[in-house]
Amino acid sequence: MGPRIGITSWHHDPTPSLPRQRGRGWEGGEDYSRAIAHAGGIPLILPIPPREESQGEGPQEALFDTFLDTIDGLLFTGGEDIHPAFYGEGLQERCGEIDQDRDHFEIELVKRAFNRRMPMLGICRGIQLFNVVLGGSLYQDLSYRPGTAEHHNAPNEKRDELIHKVRLVPESRLHQILGRLELEVTSTHHQVIKALAPGLKVSAVASDGVIEGVEAEDYPFLVAVQWHPERMLWRDPKQLGLFRALVEAARR
Ligand code: MN
Image (tube, rainbow, N blue to C red; front, side, top):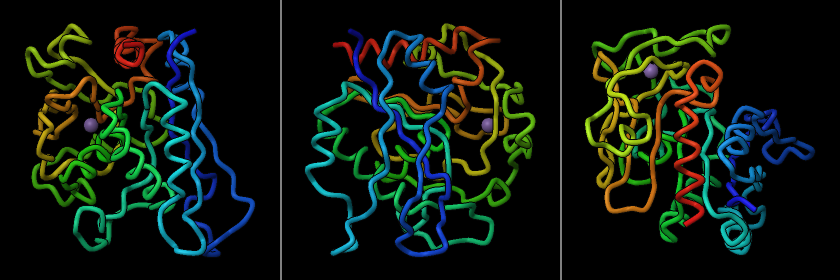
C-alpha cells in the first residue's frame, strides 16, 4: 500500500451567516486526489473541525494527533485568503474571502506536522500558509505590491490555462523535481508573499519578482508553489513530479 497523504478540504460556505452554523459541508478537489493517487499515494481528505465551542479556541488536541498518526504526508490545497491577523496585520480593503475555521485548523496542522518533520506540499494558498505559519507575511492583494503584473489573477474560466512564466532557482529541490529552469504555469492567485519566512528559501520567481516557489531548509520535504500543478498534469506531465516527490518523501 502506498503512503497515506492527508489533503486539506474547504467549506461549501466559507463565511456562514450564523456564527455557529450547523450542517455546513466540506468538499475536496478531485484534481488533488487524482494527482496523489497517480503518484502512488493514498489520498485522504481531512475535514475541517469547528473550533471548540466551549472555549472558542482551536480544535481538540486528540483530533490533530489522530489525523497525524493516520497519515504519512500532507498536501495543502488552494482556497480562501488567510486572515491577516495571523501575520500581524489589519484587514485591508482588497483582502478576499476568509474561512476562519479553516485558518485555525490548517495553521495548527502545519505547526504540529512541522514538529513531527512530516513531508508537506503546499499549493497556492498552501505556499501562503507555510509562509505565514513560519513567520512571514503576505500582500493582501496584488495591487498592494508595486510593479506586480495583473495576470497572476487570471479569471476562473482561464483557471487551467498557462498564464505566465516562472524561473526556477538552479539546484533547488524544485529544480531537481521538475528538471527545468523555466516553465509556464497556471495563475489564479490574488495574494503573494511579502516578507519571506525565516527557514524558507525561494525556489521559483515570476518575471515581475513575485515568489512562486519556496522550500524549507534543513527539513525532510517541505515544498510549495504558487501555481496549480494538479490542473496542469494533462498538458505538462512533469508536474506530476511534485506529487511523486511528496509521496516518496512520505514513504521514507
Ligand atoms: Mn502567478
